[in-house]
Length: 110
Image (cartoon, rainbow, N blue to C red; front, side, top):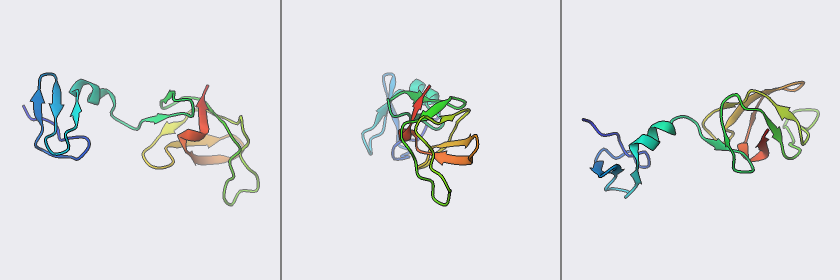
């Protein structure tokens, strides 16, 4: 059986220690069963709630949008979000505004 590379440093020298996998290069330990569940983009809202694809969120503060004639107002609802990797980790379409990328720290889950 081939063991996966370390999720932190991508080292191939991973070994088993009981139920955990251990990386000797960076000393990271993890449960392989938990790692399978956490695949994909992970994002949490301003209150610490875990977000998922398809969730509905609302903005917690006014956001200025570069090149747009008006700001996004606090309380604006955003339906059917999609999580992506990167600094702006939410892809969405805002009614009356269009396609937008948001940071999860500026939204709360409804």
